[in-house]
Image (cartoon, rainbow, N blue to C red):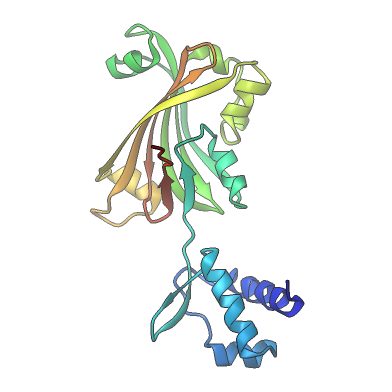
Length: 232
C-alpha cells in the first residue's frame, strides 16, 4: 500500500481524535495545505476513513467526525469488556450498587430459583472511552460469583466466573425492546427528556445448562448498534 497514503491517513486520524463527534473537518484544500500531500492522496485517505466509520460525508457540506457506536453482535456471548477491546476502545465501569436481595417472581423465573431465594443485584453504568453508553441491572446466582469483590465488579465478572470459580458461560436468551427510560436511567446515560433507549433482557446459562445471570440493559441507541447474522 502507498506509503504517502498511509502517512496522511494516520495524520488525519490523529487530528480527528482531538475533535468532538459531528465536528466538521477542514476542507480538502485546507488538508492539502496543512499536510503537503496531493489531492488524490487526501481524497483516498478520507474515503478509507469513511469506510472505517471514522468520518461521514454530507454532499456539498463536507466531511464530519463520526460518533462511533459500539457494535454488539448477538451471535456471540461476550462480556462488555470483550466487546470494547475488540473494537479498540477503552472500557470503564461505574458501580452504583451491589447487594444481596431476595429474588422476586421475575428474577426467580429467569434464574430458576424459588421466590425469596438470595441473589446478588448489581447496578452499573458501562462507559466507552469514558462516555456512558449502557445502564445495567444484573442479577447473579450466588454460587457463580462467590467471593467476588467490588474491584472485580468494575472489571469483568465473566473473567472472574471463568478464571476464579471455574464455571463456563455458554449461551444466552435475549429479548429486545425500545422504551422510554425512567429519569434516573436517562440521567446516568446523559440522555435528554423523551429520548428512547434499547432495552435488552438476557438470561445466560452455563455449559451445564444452569441459569446463572439475569440482566436488564438499557443502551443508548446513538452509541450502540446491534448486529444479528441470519442464515437460510
